[in-house]
Image (cartoon, rainbow, N blue to C red; front, side, top):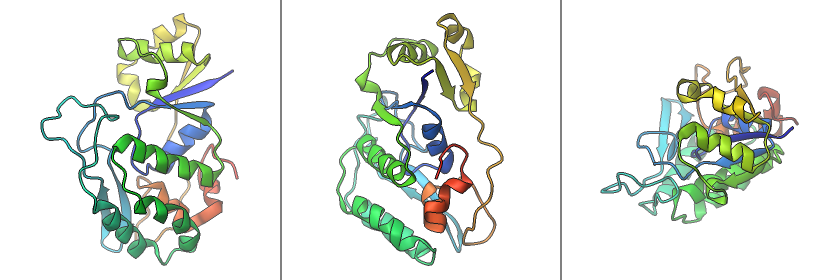
Length: 230
């Protein structure tokens, strides 16, 4: 039985994103869909002594109303320095800062031109650190048919997958009967009941970049996840 998930790329996503990757055999970055503003595609959150802070990758959007995530270009060269400074200032006191910083600081020293490529590089670096070996593909590696659900079912067929795993919010617009007709089981991923881990700066919060977990827990991070195994 092969398990598949299909999700848009996000910028340094939260831990649940990587649990979904770890739960499947192949993870398709679905960046052929329209880029959406004020979303997780180009931004995420870190914790600071003053509360949550957004880190946003500046992208070119003027006049590009229908561009895909794959087509979205990064619009500035100074953002990498600003992001890394914010990360270093707020996580330099964590137990595993030096270890994790050695992996991610070099990524912030490289000038990326496209959001999709940037996101994939960060996602792959996190997976390598966590020991997640799931195959990661791009949506343009496959033929994409029309129809939201039809496209996902067809990707299952092309990848010889017998189970499709999806985030629960997709329930509202997914036709489950189309999966059943093709003999594909659909499973709704459960993001609830994550344990808390040692975290700086006040009240605990789950919905921030996974870098927070890595800086605070290092190689112990899988103990606070569901599908990633140490």
